[in-house]
Image (tube, rainbow, N blue to C red):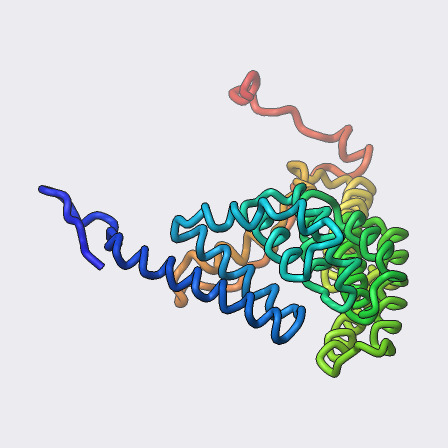
Length: 320
């Protein structure tokens, strides 16, 4: 690696030695050849697909787009009856690495049909649906493949996960009917996933964790008034209702007693909050508890008293 420094300014970005880059690309191409030999010796596998996928992305990153494009041109041959598993992987992964997903789709579908035990092509197709569609479209894609794939436990686990995602979104939108529908579907998919032949211990643990989440969401839907948020809102509204009732009672008593209440109560004013703010702003020594009172002014309470009300002094006449 060599560093290039701009004159009169800070150091620029590191510039790689072209020889080092060419050496790395040569190594990547050698590993690609080694993968081809492994495909012949080992047969098709998800691990080989994954390793080639990573390798093709690295070749593009290093600037060797020619090698990747050459593999992508083999799509037509891969789709013919003569194409091997390696030909399908070369074409599908090269097109995917070049972000030509629409062209990769028929190759991936062919790989699913010819390589039924390999989940990698199916996973890439699901990623394509996810990138351009909604969770509902992902669910429809998985359900449409359930009868065709031999690894149903894996597919059902993916299905249950999508149903949980949609249910959580519906709960946020307050759409309880849709939430319940997807929670029921999620629970059914997860229960089925645990019993399939391809289910591993790790898959079962994942299914159990998702099932626990389903139970929590079901509780939120069944008893929304018992959630922390709902209880807090309920308490606030209860306090507000009690304060308004108290104000009405005070006014009724004051009117009967001939007492006038000066000023109007601000129904939106949170006195407790104001008191907390005031307590926080002052020093600790000055933080004393306060009591809020309604100021009242006694007036003449009876009709007889009102008739005997003295006239205001002459110097007060005309004053506001």
